[in-house]
Length: 337
Image (cartoon, rainbow, N blue to C red):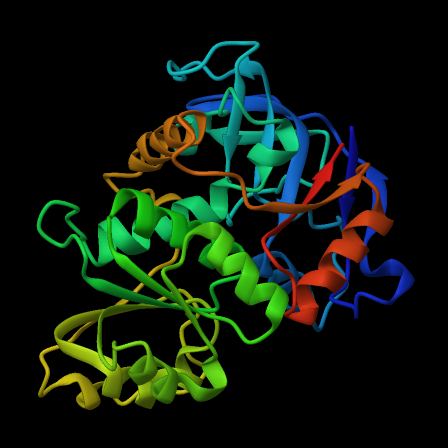
C-alpha cells in the first residue's frame, strides 16, 4: 500500500521531511478494523510529533503519522462486533499506533464511530480529533450539565482553531452556555461568530474586553493555545469554584496555588488518554463520535472544514504541516485521497 512517512525529524521545508513509500497492507485481529482511508485531516499534534519523534536518529522504517480519518471498513478482527465490511467510519486514531497517512490503517473499533451520513468525506474528516477533544473537555472534565449550568459563561482561548471551532458549537448548541471566544484578526473574529460565539474578544486586551462586555469573570475557561502564557490572567478572571481546562499544558510548572482561595478546579484534556492507556471506558469514544455524528446530521453542529487538499502526497502533507505550524489556520485542513 502507499504510505507517507518520515525517517528524520526535519524542518518541513526539507525535501525528506515527508517521503512516499510502499508498506505492507496490515491484517486485522482482535478488536481491530482494517479501514481503507479516503480522507484525513492535519492537527497540531501531527507536526509536534513529526518535529520530535526522530530528532537525534534516523529510523530504519518510515514513521507514519496522521490520526483523523474517514474510510470504509474492509476487514474486521475476530473480536470486532460493532462494524461490518462496507461500513463508512470516522475516527481520531491512537497516538501509539501507525497513523492515517496511508491507504489502509488498523484501528480499534472501540474508538471508531459511524461517519455522519449528511457530510462529505472531507467534511467528516475535519471532525473526530477536535470533536472528541472539545466534547471531553466540556462533558468529561468540566462535567457541564445543560440542565443546571445553562447560561454559565465559557471563555475559549483561541476560538478559531480546530478545537475552538467545534467547542464553540458544542458549548452553545449542546451545553447551552454563554460562549466567549478570543480572536484578534477580523477573519478569525468573523469565524468565531459564524460558529456561534456570543462574544468575541481580543486576547491582547483580554481583561479589559471582558469587562467591556459585562463578563469580567467567567465560570469556565478552555485553553486551546498556551496555558502558561494565560495562567495568571486565567486565575484572575475565573469565578470562585470555576473550572479551567487546558489541552496545551505548559513547558514550565504552573503555580497551582493561584487557584486555592477560589477553590478552582484545573483539568488537563488529552484525547488520546483512553486509547493510550486502554482505560475501562475506552469505548466511550465510540459513543461520543456517534453522538456527534447525530448532531451533525441533525444540523445542530456543522463541519469546521475550511481547506481541502487533493491527493495523498508528500507535497500535500508538507503544505498542510506548514499551515499548521504558522499558527494562523482557521478551522480544519483536510487531505482527500
